[in-house]
Image 1 (cartoon, rainbow, N blue to C red):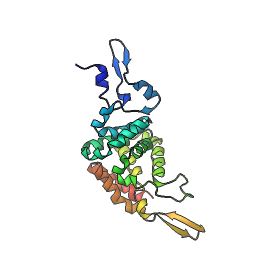
Image 2 (cartoon, helix red, strand yellow):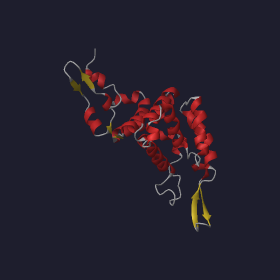
Image 3 (cartoon, rainbow, N blue to C red):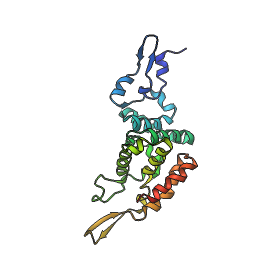
Image 4 (cartoon, one colour):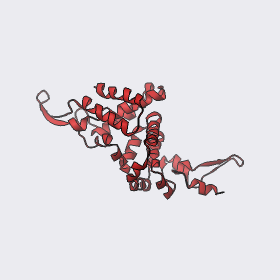
Amino acid sequence: NITTEEAAARRDFTINTLMFDPREQRIIDHFDGEQHLREKRLRHTSDAFAEDPLRVLRGMQFAARFELTAVPETIELCRSIRDSFSELAVERVLEEWLKWATKSRRPSAGILFLEQTEWLDHFPEIAELRNTPQDPHWHPEGDVLTHTCHCLDAMVKLPEWQEADSPTRVVLSFGILAHDFGKPATTETVFKEQHGRDCIVSPGHDEVGVPLTESFLSRIGAPNDLHKHVPPLERCHL
């Protein structure tokens, strides 16, 4: 016994408030969701958004799946509820990460959303990649997080990934995400005589990253099958 506007106001993002009236053959759009969808903007519908912190992780996978950019007001609201992450059941967290891992068109958009909202800090294995330097000769793109995002975005363009089933996509996505988890702990600058200069290196980061990969998978409640298949990609990625 509520109006369509009242019902729509309870939805998380404006793009999810769109309704269709089959009798009148018209779209009901109380919150400009259609315009935001065309403009690829991710905007929360109302302050009711804060009632369920899982909506931040939904924003993460929506941004990645539909190549959306969150508006500043939504970013700020997500930051204001960052401490409520602990309230979430790990099963719900996993569900959103699996959508990111299987349906993304630009995975980096989801990671960027987490960084902007400060929710990336709830996944320290990823957060530690920020500002970890790489040798500009081999990695002119920047730090390890930037490199990882480039790798993820390149992956989803490959025919092999686009044609893969969901279980395979999950393994590949998490394998790419985790492949340099070991670099923050192993990165150092050393003089390389063969190059005649100081070089940034990360010796042994492949092995060091394996327990960190396990830690991340446990943090998001990953099933045993992922624990079986993802860490070997980290160990052998070189």
